[in-house]
Image (cartoon, rainbow, N blue to C red; front, side, top):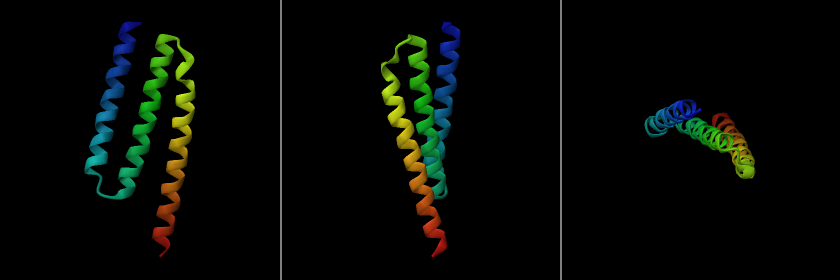
Length: 87
């Protein structure tokens, strides 16, 4: 079980690092917004993985709040991008 936990941690850390690279180097604001949403999804996956590994359900409300926050953020950016492109 420890090998799986280490493997998942390494993969999530690599995904987070690549996403941070896209946030820093993203040529447009939409690239940065999508990368921020992906980073939030990676954070949710990391918290869910830790909760499953430790068999502790106290992190579930945090996961729900982060998921809702990510959804609202994505919808807001999409609405902003549509308004900006129509002018």
